[in-house]
Length: 239
Image (cartoon, rainbow, N blue to C red; front, side):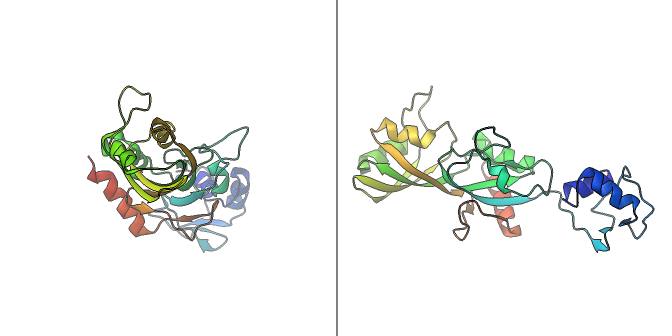
């Protein structure tokens, strides 16, 4: 890619600022400062330094984000803060993998790895999503049995089988549910189908990735190499 684009993508400065750094001799490629902004470089094969410090370039980056309620899963929005407003724009092409509703909290993966994103979201892969849910209403084993075979939520087909674990059955119940689809407001509609309302929804897992509970809402961190490998394995498992 162009040298000035690479530096701008890595947040060294704006495109105009990095052009100035290059012309001032503050950027070197393989030890030479005789470089141009439009020069094509390969950061995986060439040593690129800025102000004497080597730059480490990652083609793909992966962030685990603890989405808070009240922000939308989008790149831009005129009304609400978006999940991307929390993430440093260190690489171009970063996008959330899937969507969480405005009031839903929890695990959201953000990456520029389009192939992985496609695999995790593909209906053919059946990648599981795990949620903690609070319900206005007494959740019963009969509800769990219905979810296990699929319920009608107003679409052309029933939902795929879902695993419902009842942690507390009370006027306000607490459950954990695992689904393998991503239909619009799916969990809320599933509980509405059995006469109950979701009052709190938090995603705690996606595929083999679990939410790091040390992350407070609005916080993020890069995935470890092991977590990335587990996600890629998950995407390949359900072909």
